[in-house]
Amino acid sequence: MNAVALLAGVAVTQAQLPKQLELVAEFKGQQVTGITVGDRGRIFVNFPRWRNSVENSVMEVKSGGAARPYPDSAWNSWKPGQPVGDSVFVAVQSVLESAGKLYVLDTRNPLWGGVVNSPRIFVFDLRTNKLSDILVLSEASYKPNSYTNDLYVDEKSKAIYITDSNEPGLIVYDLKKRNSYRSLNGHASTTAEADHLMIDGVKWGTKPVHADGIAFDPKTERLYYHALTGHTLYSVSTAALRNGTDDDVAGSVRTVATTPAPDGMIFDFRGYLYMADLEKHAIVYRTPKGEMKTLIEDVNVGWADSFSIDGYYLYFTNSRIHEAKNGAEALTYPVYKIKLPMGVYTH
Image (tube, rainbow, N blue to C red):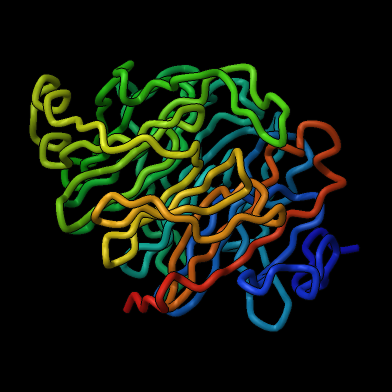
């Protein structure tokens, strides 16, 4: 069977799903984590280099039941032990569409063996599908064992905000100055509160996973972030991140709420913040009034990893991280979409 099976019901059929969930894609033996849906409905996903069996780092899911390496096979051809350069993906953790461009965050930390050269963001023009820029992180902004995890592009302020889940901290890339710097390094808000989660009554994890998911609220211009192994949601002023001293940044940090343990996060235009409840196989959301509500709780949700919003729908990946420790290649990893509460339309 092809490594990518779309709408083929390899592990689950639409009939087996709760009525809220719609199956978008399935990937046999290839653990999908990140997802982004562009303005024209183009869907991009990525596969982290956590094991040698990774076949592609970035793919575009096409309509009609096909998927292809993006932007082409050559970019996805790197294998452990080969030279690293600026025309191949090495260890991609996240993808994000913003203003007609696809931002591909390459940790440059394959197989969790340490950073082999500077983490970078490859930028592709979605009109031409050609590389338009390479944003290389400055050496002082990352550590030898950093794992750059999630990113948000602040178009208004010309900055990119990045989490480091292996060495607690945030990284800010200044698009005007074309350099990056580290912030909230080792701060309590970027540091995990535990070294494990409890999923299906079983202990998952043996080490802390620090600042992971991020989401930007344009109304308040604050960046929200959360450790994966933790239950506290924090926010920080992005103005302070960009222009303040270390003390200014630390002083602007706010403890927002006690929440379930999530992976990725995303805001819709009303200010509803969506995140996973990994320990309950659920997706929850926080309203602007601070109410926590459940969007869906079902075993098929699994490990809701990353989110994207298009039209009436929240798209998400089930990376099955809690199941993939042994025999990851035997599993099938689905991508789903689910209607936003109250039929929210985002355009």
